[in-house]
Each structure stands twice: as C-alpha cells, then as structure tokens.
Image (cartoon, rainbow, N blue to C red; front, top):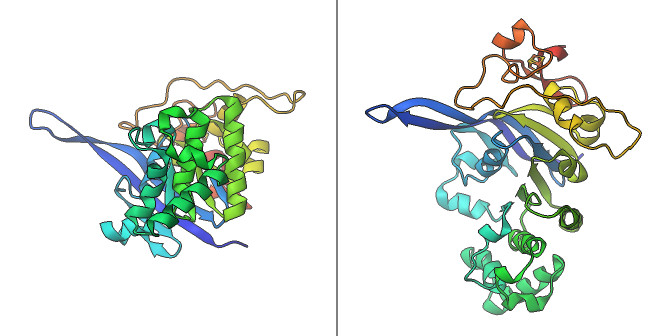
Length: 323
Ligand code: SF4
C-alpha cells in the first residue's frame, strides 16, 4: 500500500469582508471551510464542484500561493504551514501547479526555452548547457519538438500551450502536481490528448496529482478517488468507481445526473437542483446544501452533518447516512 504523500487536515481559507463607514470587518467569506483529505504517493485525487466551491483555493492553499487561514498540511513528512518563505520556495521544487489558462500563465515576451529554463535558474540548478539540454528533453517528453524552444507562446495552439505548462511544471522533477482545471479551456478533442499525456507522465515519473475540475466526466477519466466540494467543504469522498456507481450525497447525485452516461441503455434519473448556490459570505446553517436538497429535513437546517466514513473509505457529510 502506497504511503500518504499529502495529508490535509481542517484546512480553512477565510477572506474578511470590509465595509461600513470605518471600513472595518463586517463579515467573512469562507472560501475553504474545514477541508481534510489525503493523497497517496502515485495517486490521482480529483476535486470537483461548481465554480466558487473552493476547489481552486484549496489547491493554491496547499502550495501557499494563497496563505491558508488555518489547518494542517503535511507534505512528504514536512509540516508545510511552519515553513519560512524561503523554505516554502524550496519546497515548491516538489509541489508544482499547472493552471487552467496556459496562455495567461506563460510570459508572452519570453520564448519557450526561457520559460522552461526559469524554474531551474530560480532554484540554481544546472549549467547553461545542462539547462538547455533539459529543455530539449522536456519538450520531447510532452510531445513537442526541440525546435519549438525558440518560439513564443502566441505561436502555439491551446493544447500545445498546455503541454508547455505541463513541461514547465515538470522541469524540477516534482512529486506532486496540483492541476487546476488543466483542460477546461481546451476543445473536447484536445482535452483527451492532454489527459492521456498526463496519465503517461504519471506512470513514467511516478507523479501524484491533485486534479481540480468542474466537469465530472473529466475527473472520472483520470482520478483514482474523487472529492466533491460544495460551498467550501468536501461533502463526499470515495473511489472514482464508487462515486459513479453508488453516489450517496444528494449533491453528487444531482451533478452526476447531468453527466451523459457512457452506457446508452442506462436510465439515470435527472435531478434538477432548486435555487442557486448560496453566497459563501452567508452559508446556510446546518447542512449548507439544505436550501437545495430534495431530501431536506428539520435536522438538516440546524445540525451540520459529520463527514463520516460509511465503510471502505466512502466518506459523506449527510444526515441520511448515519452509522
Ligand atoms: Fe440533504 Fe439533509 Fe443530507 Fe444535507 S444532510 S444533503 S440537506 S439530506
């Protein structure tokens, strides 16, 4: 059994809301509210949910690109929250991120060689000749050619730019990659090419992924386990196959009912959710999903359900599944 590479406990990221005449704090947005999970070495954990559910904030908090409000992050035996700025910068050799919009994350004035070399320069690794050799190797690894090194980001298609984003993340030979909606901006036909590339790279380099997406069919393709987020919390977490064959949380069931089934004969009841996602500045009491849940009871309105293991590591936060 593989070891836990990443252990996250009670992670919170709250943003103060200021206002009033004196501009004081009048409230707080709970973007990430008490999130706990583990990722094993070599595993892919998918994090899925609607826009604004806190999945990207969770991913960025792990690398402390956003400073968490509180919680524990243990990565490869190191307490990430206790690291100084300098130590955190060194730690990011092993924890890299791939962003959704490859164009926005690549400096348009730098050619690809300079973009890919930069992480090595920042960390003082290799001679100039060694760095250039590594750039050439990495371009080939991600399915591009060494002659692409002299070109600029605007000369590439969206799919090629995401390959460059992945190459840049791999330059430092990291252990963990936080992939923040890496294929959401790409055409469906290109999405599967990039997902296949990520799977090949994972096998070749023993990578561990936290894969963030709003699209359940994309997450299914790549994840070993999946966590479903709603209003800053994980409401269900289990293996990919369990989540798709036996979803327990009413929110997961609603999300899945909107995903076309690969089996044309499968009859899946469409669940239409009532209302909009409430504001994270004013989350509902009790179960935060109670304003939209078709199974809501009086208890749901007042008591927050525990995030509990229903058996075999299938966690769910819902009063319907009490042990
Ligand atoms: Fe629905 Fe109640 Fe379960 Fe929340 S706890 S998901 S409101 S049944």
